[in-house]
Length: 637
Image 1 (cartoon, one colour):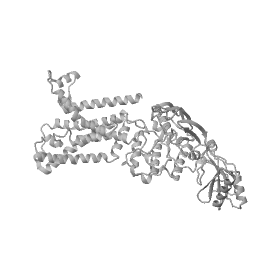
Image 2 (cartoon, one colour):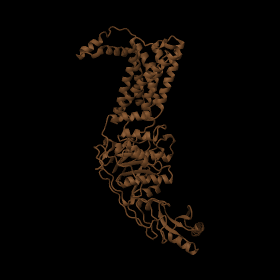
Image 3 (cartoon, helix red, strand yellow):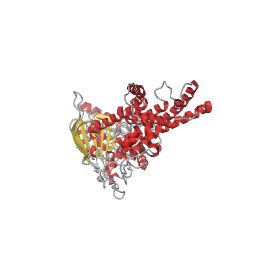
C-alpha cells in the first residue's frame, strides 16, 4: 500500500511549487492512475514519492518511508523514463548488471526477458531499441527484483494500441496477484479503461480522487455508439435534424460502419433511424472509450444487460446493445472477479522465505487471461560485500570502451617507444614506458586515468541505478569496488605496456635496448604506483565532479599543476633530513620486519618523497577527502 501525505515541491524562485499538498492512497490488489494534463505535476509527484527530488511531505510503502527500507528496489519497481543504459550495452548485459546491483540471482534475467517478450532481442544493443522495446526493457528492470509496488511514469506514452494493451495487461496481472500499481497518464480514457481508481491533478493540486466508474460517469464525455450498414446516411440525417432543431450534436464517423454521436441520446437516434427505415445493429450509451478490443479489469466486472443506460465497470465503460445477439463490443456475460491479496509478502529488509512459504496466490477468475508474471524469487540473497564488485565487473566488461582504450594505449605506446629509440637521448626506463620528457604522463598512465574516470563518469552519464536505487553511486562499497577494479586494470595495463614495448624494440632494433635495468625493482614499483595512482585519481575526481572529462582533467592536473608546486616546496633549504626513518619505524612497532621488509619500507618512503610520487599522494588524499565530504553531505541532506 502507498500512502502519500502532504507532498509539496520546493518553490521555483517566485513561482508557485509544481506540486502543492498532494495526499492520496494506492491500495494493494488495485491499479491506481495519476491523471493530469502535461505540466500538472505528475512526474514531480512521483519523484517526490521516490525521494529523488527535494520537497516536503512523506510517502509510506507498506508503512515505511523509502529511506527506512534496507533494500528499496525489492519493495518498489520504478519506470520513470527510457532505460538510461549505455547504448552499446546489450539487453542481457543491462539486466545482468542491475541484477548484481540489487542482489538477485542471474537466472532472474532469463525469466523477466521471457515475460516481457524480449527473448529474440536479448543480444540487441540498447541504442537500437524502438520505443516499444525500450518500454518492455524498462518494465523488465522494474520487475527484476520481484517488488510489491510498481511506480511508472506514463508507461504507455508513445506506444501502439497493441503494445499499450499488453503493458496494461502486465500491470493488471501484477495487481491481481496482490501487488500495488501506480502509473501516471495524461489520457482520461486510458485512465478510465485500465485503472480501478483515478487520482486527478490540476496545477499541482489534487482535484479528484475517485473510483474509475465515478470518474468515467462524471468527468468523461458521454456518447452513443451506433453500428449500421447505412452509417453514412444515418450520420447525415442526424446532423441535418440537429441543425434544424438548433441542437449541438457531433457525429464522428469511426472505422467501418460505426458512428459515435455526442450530444444526443439512444431514444432520439433510434426514432430517427425508425422514421427513415434505417437498419441499426447496435445502439448503446457509452462513457469513455470502449473501443472494439477494450480490456475490462479483472475486478468487479458487471454483466451487460439489454437496457439503454450504461453499466460501468471499475476500469472502463460498458456498452448496452439494443440487439438480441451480443456484439464484439459487449460480451454477453462475465463472472465477477476479486483481486487476491498477496500471500506471504515480507519486508524487503528481512530474510527471504523459502519457495514453500512464499508462492504467488492463485489468480482471480477474471484474470486468467492476463499475461504471466515472472515467478517469485524463492530465496533472497543476503547482503554481500562482493555485490558491488560483481556489479562493477559486469559494468566494465559489458561494453567495448575499456577494451578499445587498452588497445589504443598499447599501440600508441609501442609506436612511441620505437620512435624515441630512433631519435635517441632517451633513458632506458623512459624508453620502456614510452614516456618522452615533453609529455606530462606516459600513454599507459593516461589510459589508466581515462578508464578510472569512465568508471564513475558512466554512472552519471547513463544512470542505470539512479531510479532503481539498488546501489547509489555515492556508496562507499561501490567506491571500493571501482578502486579495486581500476587498480587491477591499471596493473595489467602497466605490465602489458612494458611487455609490448620490449617486444617492439626487440623486433626493430634487436637485443641492444631490451636489457633489464639494475634497479628494476624500484623502477617497477614506481611504474605500478604511477599507473594505479592515475587510475584512482580518475575514479575519485569523476565521482566528485560527476563527469568523465573532469576525471581525466584531474589526472592531467597532477603533473602539470601539483608536481611543480611540490618541486618548488622541496627545492627550498632543508635544516634536517629523515635519515634512519626505517630503523625508527621498526623501533616504534617493536617488531622485526620479515623477509627484509625494512628495505621495502625505505623504498616506498623514497617513492613518496619524490616530486611525482608526493604530488600523486597529495592529490589522492585531497580527492578522497573531498569524496567523503560530498558523500556525508548528501547523506545529511
